Length: 121
Image 1 (tube, rainbow, N blue to C red):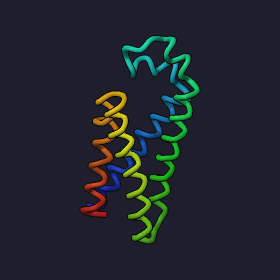
Image 2: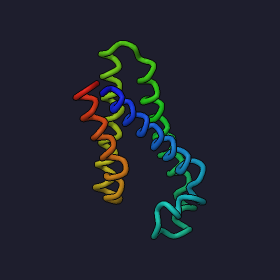
Image 3: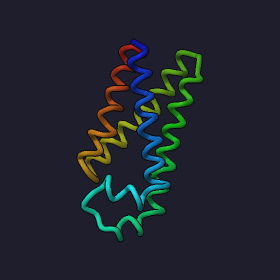
């Protein structure tokens, strides 16, 4: 069932690379379609802040990509646990402070990956 864990990690990587793209490069064009209900002005004035968030999402994706190159089982588990936990906590925090949808989009897949990591990793 390592395939399940790896598949969930790949899903998290793809999601966070998309978040990087959205927040760093498409905030004013695609952002209003994703985050409806906010004014055009909101996206203009938050462009730099969103780009900074996108960079952090890229770091999370990079950390998860790194796990595929770690061959020591203990290090692989620990590094995976760290980065997946960061994503899960970000999903909980975003869901509590911004939109509940963030918990479902970001937090739930991370928690599923954590469960899979503990069961099969």
